Image 1 (spheres, helix red, strand yellow):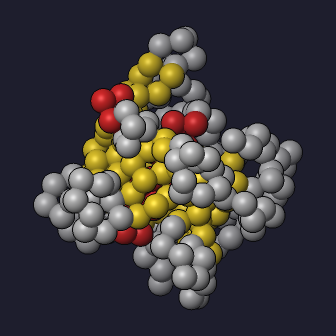
Image 2: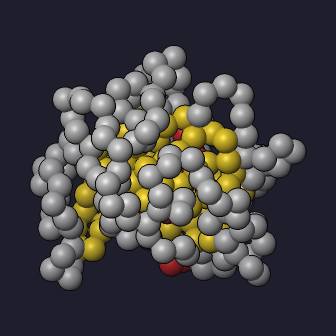
Image 3: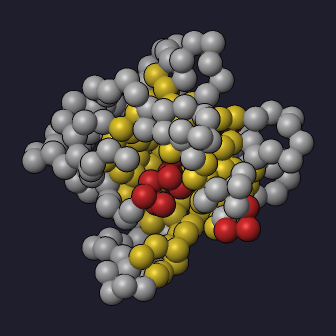
Length: 230
């Protein structure tokens, strides 16, 4: 994993009723021509909202109509070969019940995977809920619930969320209080995904506004990719 980039003075976000926090990390989602894989590229920590790297930090391999295989498999590394890029997460997509997101090696150690549900909350699929257990500042763990909500008002710093796009999302805390995991409150924006305009191999950029560990980041990467598949 690349080191966390912490810019000294990120660009100011547009003034809205729900302000964003200072960002901690950015990833860009790419899907190259003639490739079925999704690639997540970690930025170098600069204020520029466009990526400076070309080697993926994570690969997500989609599977369609393959019996017994998750719809999405998350690899920690530049390719989808388990020998060089171990499996660290997966997702099952369902049409009539909540989707399932898993953290861990669902291929070689499925018994150790930690599963969470991702539920569509609105008829127009404009809001999805999910949650997970996160480490607290006191050394324990606390359950925190979130929701991805479609937005045209919030965007990655330095970018603009175009109103006609249905691919712009903000991640809000649904839990009252943060359970001791950090200085956050209900309805705080802890992440935002802004889609790229036009037809391009670059789908968009994920901005994470809190430092809640690698499992939280992987859950966001999986859930945003899942939103491109449903």
